[in-house]
Amino acid sequence: MFRVFFRTILCICFLICCFTAAVCQAAESDLQQSIAAIEARIESYVPDTNYRDDVFGLIVVKQAIVSLKAGSGGIGACLVDAKTGKLVETGRNRQYSPYFRSDMHAEMDLLNRYEDRLKKKGGSNSTNDPRKCGDLILFTSTEPCPMCLTRIINAGIQHMYYINPDLEGGMAHRMEHLPKFWREFAAGRDFRQAECSPVLRKIAEDLFRHSVRSFAKKRKK
Image 1 (tube, one colour):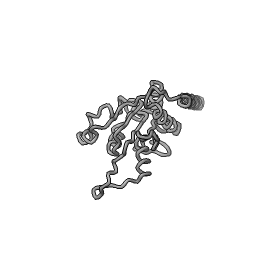
Image 2 (cartoon, rainbow, N blue to C red):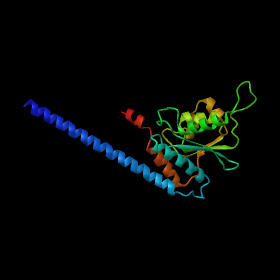
Image 3 (cartoon, rainbow, N blue to C red):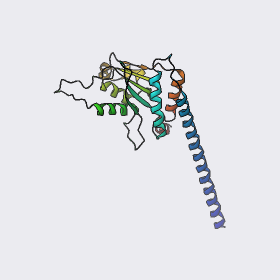
Image 4 (cartoon, one colour):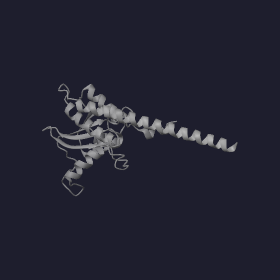
């Protein structure tokens, strides 16, 4: 009798494992199909000349899809010279790939690459100001979080435009809540939503939603 009961339990456990594996495979397949669909939308998109920032918006969503396919957050960023329209640097979220880096948001990656390449000099004993960024504009596919916004301010960037607003975690639309030092340091800077088409804004939103704070959701009761 015990053997029959034990075998029954084993069979039930085996069926549960098989069902769970099938559900996981189906979910993974759905995820990959969804990402592929977004990628197809990006590849077929032509910048809308009615929107000033569409060209650069397309650049950052292309960076974001690369990041999402690599297993990190679907956010991309770039630096552009406002005088020439030349692309200066690109960056993307690398938080989970190739290994976990809690600081490696797209804007952080972008500014790391820019500053490492230029190797600016400065400091209390120098007459150089490493925060002089000329007419650089920082574009990002999603509104920066508090960490990235203060990094952007500290880097000396005067103009930052985001495509997709992040009402829950973004900081640019609530700069009045920054500590006094950061509010005063950022005074006079132009930080706001980019002028991009609704189609491109939706792409940026979908990219972000694929990777939005799953770790935080698990903690909610």
